[in-house]
Amino acid sequence: MKKRTKIIILSLMIVLLGVTGYLNIVLNNNVSPTTTTTTTSYFVSYRNDRETSRDQQMLYYDAIIDSETSSAEAKTNAENAKLALIASMEKELDTENLVKACGFSDCVISITDPNVNVVVECASITDDENIIITNTVSEALGIEPRYIVIIPVE
Image 1: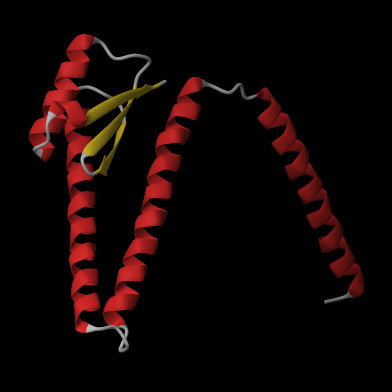
Image 2 (image 1 turned 180 degrees about the horizontal axis):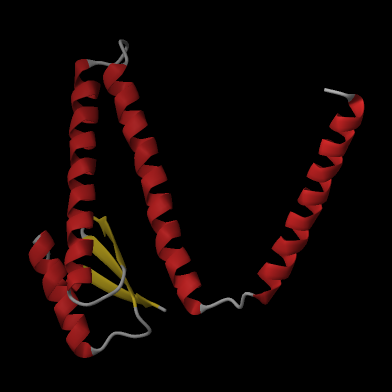
């Protein structure tokens, strides 16, 4: 390719980059932030953080299980902990879906023995909604209602 052609292509790319930057600034200044974006970001962020944490735990357990220097007891403990983590993940996911089926647009659940935190997407919780969520979570997880904490997030 000739030197002149290369210069023209490079110049066009620089101009396109400048136009892209300008459009990015103009379009982002015209978008007004909304509560929905914040709420959605909260739930997405929470799920991403939870998944990252769980992935790290799984890698830790796998490292213990695969290590030749780990004792048989350590490997058994790691296998049991990994199975317990998987069971907890399944419970959280199933219970989240049950709460969503009660009419809430989004929900995340955190099980920390013996407590369960339920974060639902809504401005506030009515007494009837509180009862519905508490009963649903209590029946799904087999825990007493006094250990369930419901947190509305707008």
